[in-house]
Image 1 (tube, rainbow, N blue to C red):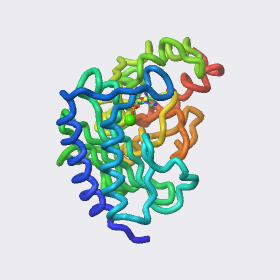
Image 2 (image 1 turned 90 degrees about the horizontal axis):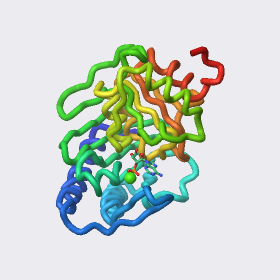
Image 3 (image 1 turned 30 degrees about the vertical axis):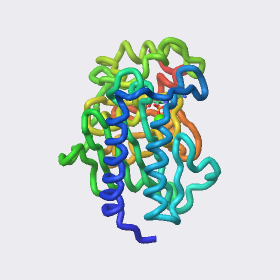
Image 4 (image 1 turned 45 degrees about the horizontal axis):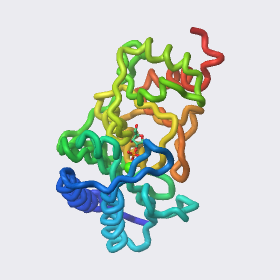
Length: 269
Ligand code: 2AM
Ligand code: CA
């Protein structure tokens, strides 16, 4: 296959822009809100509308491509062969409902499991984080710099505060040590935005115990293009067909984070 990823990215940006307008217009109307896996896992009719709009546009232009979306599309997909689009129609749905800012549309294109295009559109800030594999990553028109190593003591960590309250997948003491050793912690409530913030240097890492491929697929392309390290807590590549833990960071920080997140029982602190 010989796709022109740059052209596809430019076209995809137009579709996301259209979807973003729809979201802005919906903000002050009555929203139909439901819960999914738990009472804090929310979805609105706008999540479905945005996913359907993007799916329709993609299908019309690329009938051979696979599409996986958070809400409906691609439940049957079992392999990453060929070209696959991953859609998170609203990343940060809780922010969308409660705060009306800090939510994003995240769209990625991968070919045979390798990220080719990443787009994270922070709708209310009107910030476009985009990357095409091999061509660097951008925040609006500005090309993002390659990242440099950093130590935990100098690092601002991106982390959902909920994980500090109670976490059966990790030793919470270990998380507390990690946070205390760091310079500070930030939490924005939208994984795709937080991964984009790592890519552009606003955060030094982003950690989550459980995300789905549509939450991080676009972020992965941005992060790879800026020289960041990305893995599961077990230091494996993050999967594109099932949920996973994720640690994305500047070099110099990654191994230490993984010690606290996974390997901490053997860590001398
Ligand atoms: P979402 O808004 O698309 O659901 C919140 O810290 C971040 O975690 C958001 O990016 C949110 O994505 C993501 N997330 C993934 N799985 C979640 C779940 N089951 N419940 C709440 N947030 C989830
Ligand atoms: Ca979502």
